[in-house]
Length: 67
View 1 (spheres, rainbow, N blue to C red):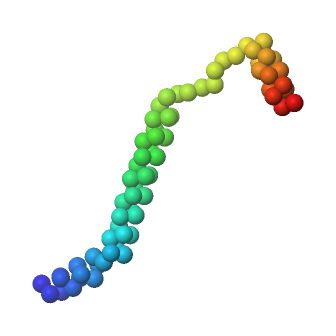
View 2: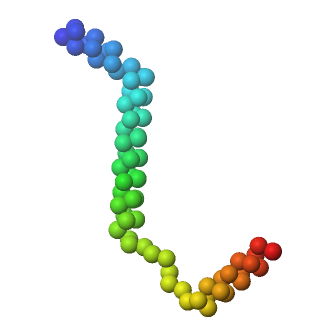
View 3: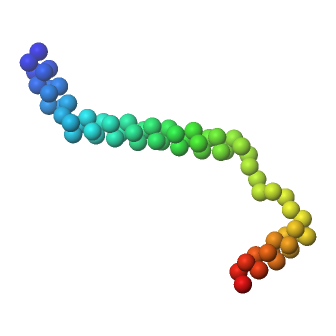
């Protein structure tokens, strides 16, 4: 029992608990990022279709904005 108490006492310092807490935070962050990426992949997004006329109009607008 004494050895058990010494072991727990040596490993349950604030520093060790902080390390464990940060590791769990990273794991949760990775889980969240994974969920977001899976969701975005499932949306099957694509660029909107446009006509040549609209493309020319947008190029004109861009030209005006850069001048």
